[in-house]
Length: 463
Image (cartoon, rainbow, N blue to C red; front, side, top):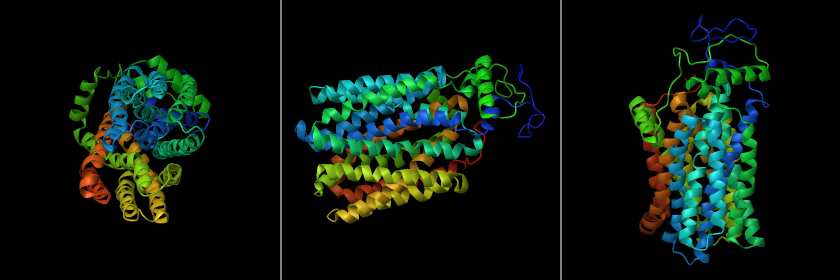
């Protein structure tokens, strides 16, 4: 069935002479802030709370070490429990989003996160606190794959790289808000429970806002839900002021849409059989680049306090590092369509680790430490948004959330055990600097795999 809207002749394209499908219509629309931009803003706010919560692990470590008289090894479980929960949540929610839709997965992820974050603030002991941090992570872990799948599927292909890269601008905002609010609350209330309680109210607001987000028309089309897909596409065409064209709602070459495998393990098997090299590259990049990021996020406040920084100064340094990351996201958004995904990753990720290495060599000189950490904050936030945009473009629609989710899950698990290995083994045995050198070497290996096995996706159609 074709659209009943008044039409203009289809534009010439990859299938000149044939009607475009819903995906082509959506990806050739003009970008409007009141339409696609609104989805970007709503999705980004959820991503911001992901950053806030992960940053909170590093803030809580020195506070709970004092509150419950923990060792550094014991405190490692704060990040480990939360990130393992996020890792499991990433692939579970990615699979859910590929089966029931991006919109439904939105509210569920934040609802689970909000409930268990509130319970964590009330935890009477460390063991129960870790259980609640794990369960909160289980909910929040779905935000990143669901957000990127939804935003990417509404965004025109000519600006998709910039928009998906700009999504990561919400991460340094969340990290900076965490550092600033933690410094303020600890100087006024001096209670770590207040830091967690603060996370509940904005999440409830976002859960309400997201009710107005439409379902992805690409998802609806792939599921064979033709009338629903057509309704969303027609509304987008009208609201963006684009010329109305005839189109087929279902994917080209398919009369019934595509049925997604129903279990997470079947989705995982399909990723490794249908796109093994792309999956290997995505996992390698996520596990190494984000491992470096999470190690710094988890242990830098403790490293700075140990070097003589006061708690408030250490938290504000973390906040400042995150704020410079906003500039990094802006730089990434400006360069990603000009330079390409792979080159930006290959330059920014190793340089970011280099800055941390230089900071670790000057720990007794606060001015140098802060300067190198600010440079690190800028460079790492060039790398991460480009990585997220790149990974989300490597898979077709029916596997996009699952592919991103499993890569995110791999990174969360490595980022959970990695900081524990760093603090418990590498740091005491080899020193902080040696640990950062090892991180850099792993990133270089992953980048080599990327250039060997994965294509550049700049300007490519999602399908």
